[in-house]
Length: 298
Image 1 (cartoon, rainbow, N blue to C red):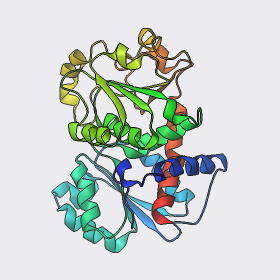
Image 2: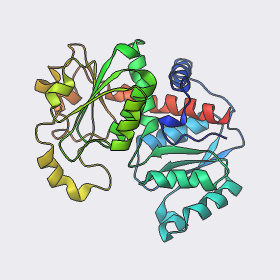
Image 3: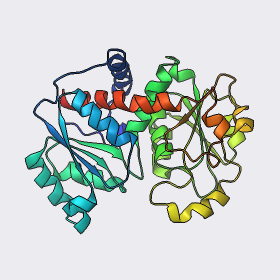
Image 4: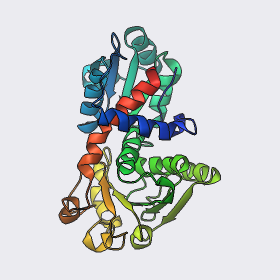
């Protein structure tokens, strides 16, 4: 039985294999009966558009069915222990796709259940998004090891997952975050010990210089809304606008995992500009998640 709790769930060659498989699925508008007779529980403690729809459609493309659960309409909202939830759901369904706050929640569900668990987002990691982003990048260049990819903004779950991806795909990763908002130290140290090329700075201009792909995300993620004003002050100067983008490679492409706050972390002109590939990036969630599900259930 396989779980997909972070990119680190993969073996050394499996990350690239998933990118190649997702590309095949996209090109062939892939359908199968791999999940025929199987139902997956979609356990979402956080709101979602792309993750929910792409997983539900992807599961149906593979012949399966879904049950959508939130704390409001299940015992999760009454603090039923996760180990009880895991054991009960294992008697009913054949997998769990979980979007929650703490990484330990998906790990506990995987530990106590007897069915596969997929991390659809935690505060620590967003592996399905990053793997989809690697598909988006691969569609534009297959020479991943020579790339410079930059991250401008909060050292959040996306930044942590980009660090993990740099271990598997070999690109140079430049991260610019304000003091106090840097990526998880343990994640970074592990990646560096494994040979990853990661540069962390508080200077967005230094991080973006010469980059082939530029990433950003909202300054206040779900659950951090009370920090909005504080974060706006801390992230002053971190907006991905035309002036900052001009320091990247002339053919650089812009990524954003969405939803975007235009005028905050990214300017309207860059978001809607010719270098933006954010909607190709969003589409690829569907194809990559189908590849991940096939990897789990084949």
